[in-house]
Image (tube, rainbow, N blue to C red; front, side, top):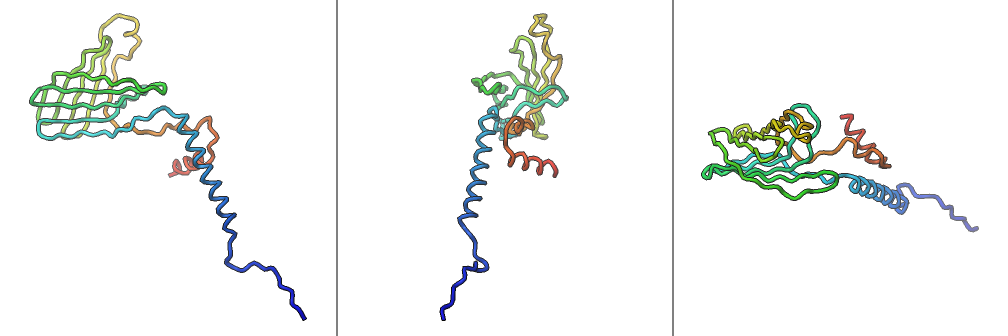
Length: 195
């Protein structure tokens, strides 16, 4: 008497090809959403706010951020190098606006050096005057931009006074997910905002 073999799945056995298919599908979706967001964003300034002093040499880096609660500034990465023996500071800045990176701007200014701070003024622009203070002990750079008394129309449209500080350059825009079909990143953003 012959017995008929029954096809019964063994316990603990998986269909690895099905699991692999869904893992590959998930990885493809993550890559697609990352590509969509990367192509839609403006270039980011990758810089860390820092102040470093070694002997007569002080270096400060970062991105100008408003601290007076006003409208956001044009993204600008800045590096300032001060040499006490020369009595001057050299400031290099790069602006990013409308998906464009501008060529670096470099200027050297006479500076005043104290034990805990370095200050200098930038009177080069036509419409504004900058006063910069590097706090060595606090490891901070504070700047004030004040409008000059120039009566030209383009000068009068500028704000009277802006207070700013060098901060970190990297930031994720809260609106970067808007207008794009990115369900996984939207879900991840929602979960992160809950914490």
